[in-house]
Image (cartoon, rainbow, N blue to C red):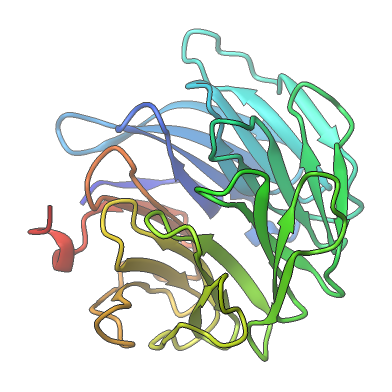
Length: 319
């Protein structure tokens, strides 16, 4: 299993490139994100089974999330000073400063996402100031601000299939679905957990299916066509679910990382219990992503400064 140590930096988010199966970006912070700066690492899997650093970028505040754009070299980070940064990760360029910065949030930005439908080239940011903002990367000012959460906004994710649509979750326990075309009120709302909701994700195969992960240790799935009750509930995490991701290869597989130091895999059509529990972190497990270009490969990262790239045993024989 390839592993990389981010020295004196605590991992918050990891994302595979959409263009290069061997490349990934990792957002990290000093001092567990409570003080100090942050580092964006661009890493690459090597032919001998290792991981090497190909580039790194320093920022004056902690980095809490990262996403690749539709350009092979453009990476966006979210930071504790309320900003977003657009970096050029082209190895030949070697620029050490962001190409663009976007600063409107009044508190930490905990989530950043890039549109997933071809009709759009936009960014989303979710902040502890309880707002979500929509951005055109070519403009310094946001296009829209969405006010709907009464507590911290932890995550906002574009739909994989439905244009102009995103979901958000927050400390108020709600999952909300929004339309970006000038609508300032959510189109659908559900009390997803009786606890803070830290993560959400859209299924890759079913456009109406999305899931949430809460500080109650539960993962719940919801169908947009009948939003009132969960479609499924997954159990097993002993502490808060920090991030969830549907598999891009198998419609019934979902992965999650938790503050209980684990990464877990579920077949949510078969059983509410995890089909595999992976314990290779010794601190909070924060970042998680599937490699969309290599079947069943995952990456995770945590506060123990370790980045792991692996294929779960339960999926090693699946195609």
